[in-house]
Length: 184
Image 1 (spheres, rainbow, N blue to C red):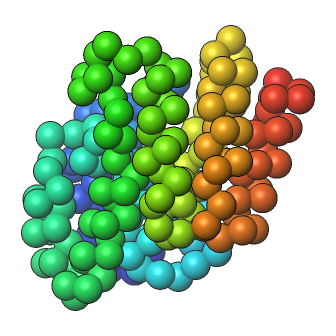
Image 2: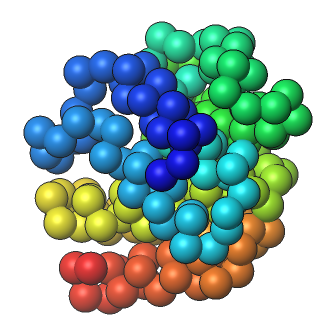
């Protein structure tokens, strides 16, 4: 990992603090690192790779988008920092339970999907990698919830079609395999 991405990884790790993955005691940062590594198989764009590392920071930590931008501008040029923050912002859920307590999960997910459809190809690429990593975890650790989760991901992947196609195909195959076999 180059110096810029290592600095971004360290920032994301610090932002997530003591958070762990839902189904394991692993530090949360393992997920964004895996998402970034999956993206790196398809692109070397620093803004995409940095956004993959940061994709849950604004949504899941007290760190603000402005704080992320200030940090990014300290380790990369302004254009790359701006693009990185743009992708992170596009990937940050808007229709959360906290923000929309009167909407049930299905309604929130439907609205979130409508929002995601208009996101950039770069953000959609990161979303594909995020789906791949999360789907594996859910199928392995929560088979009862996996069918609901994978059906939501199937709906997302049907509509998000602007990212790197080979990665999308990989995500679709993984989700379909999970739905058919109940395992990945």
